[in-house]
Image (cartoon, rainbow, N blue to C red):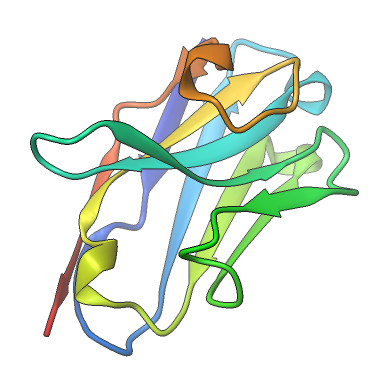
Amino acid sequence: VQLIESGGGLVQAGDSLSLSCVASGLTFGENHMAWFRQEPGKDRDFVAAVTENGDRTNYADSVKGRFTVSRENAKNTVYLQMTNLKPEDTAVYYCAANPVFGMVESEYTYWGQGTQVTVSS
């Protein structure tokens, strides 16, 4: 199984950025997908999740109203659209896949390598 994230970069506060994660080696449409993020020296935190068919989403309170998670099963891809970015959004962003829908890191089986998002003030 491979999950490959892309789209990270350096932006200014208030800017938008879109992350993508392409999955292979698994039945994408049978897996719920999530985004987590990790700051240096801190635990990996839940950001957003979407069910296997995209009919339900869940967000961390810190990103509600600013981030949108979506997926295209035909392309084995999950997205994270981030708007009104803040310096505290700076982190390495990871996508994850699991047959069970949840917000807990330990519940997710497959992980990408991460992509860095840096928001300057």
